[in-house]
Amino acid sequence: MMLRSIHWRKNCLIIIDQTKLPQKLTYLCLSNVREVVEAIKKMRIRGAPALAGAASFGLYLGIRYSKAKNYLEFKKELDSVSHFIGSARPTAVNLFWALKRMQNKAEENREKPIGKIKEILLQEAKKILEEDRLVCRKLAKFGSKLIKNNDRILTICNAGILATVDYGTALGVLYEAKKQKKSFKVFACETRPLLHGARLTNWELKQNKIDVTLICDSMAGFLMQKNMIDKVLVGADRIALNGDTANKIGTYNLAVLAHHHRIPFYVVAPLSSFDPKIKEGRFIPIEERAPCEVTHLFFKRPIAPKGIKVFNPAFDVTPQRLITAFVTEKGIILPPFKENIKKFLNES
Ligand code: MRU
Image 1 (cartoon, rainbow, N blue to C red):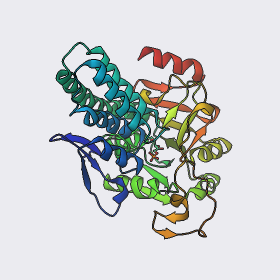
Image 2 (image 1 turned 180 degrees about the horizontal axis):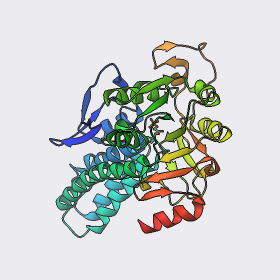
Image 3 (image 1 turned 45 degrees about the vertical axis):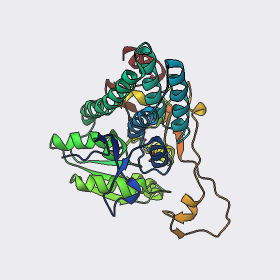
Image 4 (image 1 turned 135 degrees about the horizontal axis):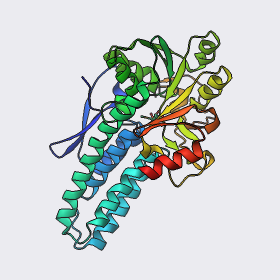
């Protein structure tokens, strides 16, 4: 039933070019690390778990023709390719998690011939993709328990098939609930500036026959006030140890509104989205993107005076006190988050 937003075939990384959706479903074949970094920067591939997959294959592609004569030389190349990939987008921790995991794998096998280490890294990248498929299905099962018949669910950005390998986090919960024959409606925020909600979430939910209605970001409060929303489900790009959560810009607005209207607000994310090095949300690096994303409608039509000043942060941080619960592959994390997140991370 599901598409794959990213997979490995015939020595190439195949991705859906998400900048072309919803008009065209086109695939790109990436055969070197420069192409992978370009695709990440331009958001041809995006969404935290999908970025982990892209980063791991990007690292392999960056070293696959390495002529290093020993592990030290090879390690230098690995570090420099990792740094190059890490510079593509700063907020989603999954990208860095995947790079670290690949680097650790190389380190564990440092005594082996370089050719063998390359092969091991390719296998590890494949494993990262395969695990994402399983993890998304597991967390979707836990999350589906939260969905009741006739629920009206609000979401932002795209935390679905396109943001993962093939199932999604927040939207994976909805696919699972649909499998269980629950009936519900979804409202999808358009998600300015690049319309990842309007273009991507609507496209994939419609493809999968889920009842979805598009709204502008500024309409969310109106819907909540009119009692048209029962719960909010979002993904995450990086979660601090206290539960503060970075996700697409506009998520914080929804959390404040949901809190005001006493609507449950759930973050659905794999444990790889939790950053063990970050204690609180204020330390999460927030990506700032080019002004043309705001001044032009999808880079094409200008909608603001030429030369206007622009501020374009791609993510915001929702304080943990506004979050009802986290849905992960190991189960649902309830408050107090600081203690419970620690337990979940230590058990994994
Ligand atoms: O800028 P994007 O489109 O990469 O931002 C994506 C999001 O904010 C998603 O909600 C998040 O990565 C979770 S995806 C399962």
